[in-house]
Length: 115
Length: 114
Image (cartoon, rainbow over all chains, first blue to last red; front, side, top):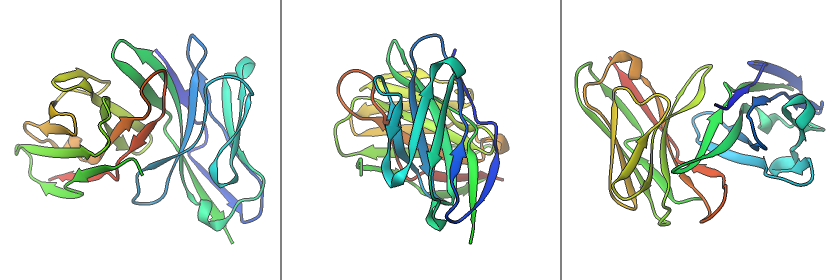
């Protein structure tokens, strides 16, 4: 069975600083990988996804993520954080089963942004 | 906007009472999912549906049942609510028609069981 680990529960960065959120996955085949963001009191919004091809994927809001098979990682990055990026971020791995596409989520990383 | 609504958005109930949460979609998607979100656990799958009257269990299905009598509605029922079921519940649909596709989430229902 697949699993996802987000080692950092909380991260605080200063506005304008760069950001990297870590995600490690366990899955026996080529993974489908996702990053979602959840603002307070809101649902989850898809930031980006990796299915195949170029291992560096671009997403919305200036985010990017790099798939590294050798490290089983899919870290999320942003070169300059804005105060509005404060939210909780979830990494997920997807797999097929006999009745659909299943997502397994990590525990989340809460990002705080200092002015 | 994937056209997903959830009702109610907030509910407080007492232990032992039945509770039904509703997920409604407007875009005729085949696959629908119910998750619960708890601190430190991310989202965990409760049940999912792959068509009308076709449902299956997820990772944390004990104490929950679901029904899907119409494409647009997916109901989650707690037959006898317990305090451990206090959580935020999210419904999701799978986008696209073939292959692997991302899921789109509703706004959530915050349930408190006293």
